[in-house]
Length: 192
Image (tube, rainbow, N blue to C red; front, side):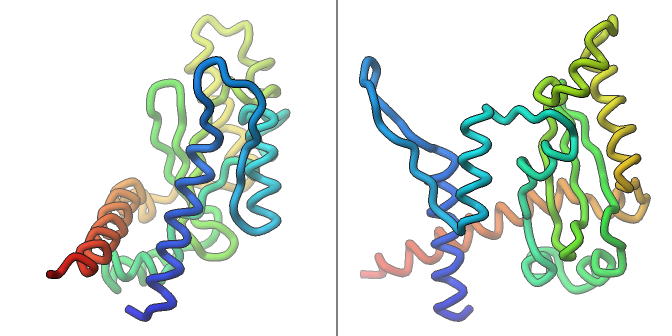
């Protein structure tokens, strides 16, 4: 692996750590400021998430605000091999796989750039869905169904090949590979 790529991965990990941990203050401490690291677009997105507490007026806004790119095809190939990557590359943008996790819906999909992306949807944070499901006896189930319907209206579609491809498993493998690389890089410095 080239030094530039290793440096880029370390920068990406450090940036993610700073942006997810955010500002930490001691109890009783006042003031302070949040710190965001990234491109202008990434900083704007992070600020918007913090200011709205992740809430959005509709599903489209929520998707833009919460989208996480998990990997591009080259990263996928380094993790799961060329056959799985070729299968992923053949799929069209918008294919998705939904995984319900309690009151949350994890949506894995191929985005318009050809990358594997994920959005963790909490329907109670989407005003239009919350309003429409408010009177349901089982708010959570109704909100999840409404979210699924709206995703399909936005041209997201389930695909057996994508579901069989197991994007949640690929995400786990990517995390493992990235963690292993970081450990290997840190251990190189202590070879004495």
